[in-house]
Image (cartoon, rainbow over all chains, first blue to last red; front, side, top):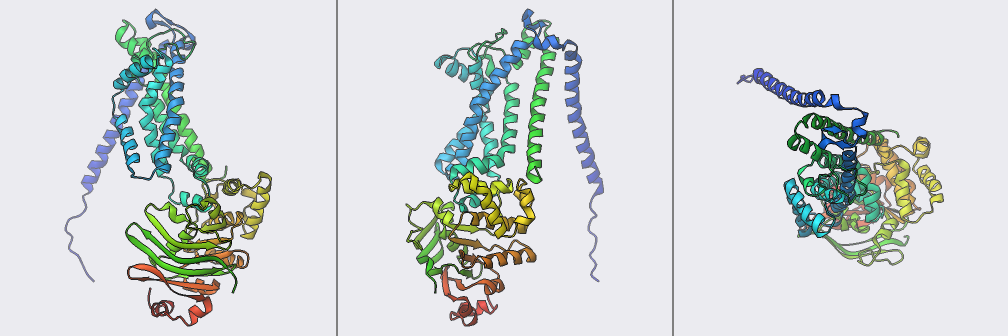
Length: 289
Length: 256
């Protein structure tokens, strides 16, 4: 029998130390999140009531509710997604299916999109003010704000959709080609449905960023706390409302916390809806529907 | 001998600077099974994929020479309608590749694309599923995702999907190599059952399988850095008394 001399036994002590450090990091992360939520609930929950959701903004936000704010927020989000989803999906489809990978055009567009992702949101705000509000004459409006946000989340949507399309099983495209399917049919009947879970995750992240954006909206959708009557009215987004209450309104912090709690709940709602949706799709894919 | 379903002359395939296949002349007899055999990397798959222009999908791939269908259609002509060509010359790949959608959708998508009337589609699905012996097994779960089927069932589904479009020729790219022996036997019997109905061209690494099913055999070999055809003829003759020295060694199991 061949025996090998034992050089050094694997270190169990190191394993333990790494495990403990990991556990500590995990606990700390959770503690920070828990603290944040607890603080918001403690400060914000007492003011939450039906009238908070249905009431007009009173006394610069110290009193009343946030109904117009919620309507403006949803309006801005609708404009944003209405432009960003078709544009982002279209760009990703073009990059992944219609131009040869690595061609000059593809590289140019892809690096442009990536560059856009690194632009600070306040710069988007300035651009939106000059381009949408002034040049296109849309003014301080929900439309201006939504379109500015669309530009901001566009790179995110392109990237996630592109990744989803590129990580599809490699044999899907030859299978389709072998049956004589056109590029349009392949893209819309096969690839997009298969990539949908990934696309939805991208949209969810985009919604999260759009909902929490302040800087890009300050000079585009404006401050008005009136109930907007159309997309061309100025409207204050929830995040801008929180910013204003916390910074510019004396004794506004309680209402700021309540609004922040609503914003957090809204984002959690969007996230869990997206997770539920993709799990539903995954279940349908792996078993009977 | 029957008429040729495919008439190939001077066919070469290259990928950028690399010549994969050089100057192949071959007539594929109609309604028979032609087996393409030879070691890996000798251009068999490139040859097969050139027959319905799947080589178009590979960036930098160039095909020259002539491939004529029975009616005179020139496959390599850039003007040829590729989508219609691929309906006429179908393919079954090495790994089963059903679309990750319901079994029914796997048929509906290609059938609709090629102009079948919506009302004819259910009958068409039943006919081809019966042809591949899947109807009894899965007729009550056409709404289920095709990826829930076993590997062998998926491969038969892919064959049925290709058959649904009523092709004149079906290309098989090592259709059994990803299957277990039992499922492989089932698929092999199905290929045999296609004889006289469609023209079959099959690439296989499995010499015993080629011997069992082929009417016609073509041996590929690498010469001067590129794959080429070194021996071809009726399967019986090729297997019993090959002429080419490399083919003799290969078919006797001494090389390749």
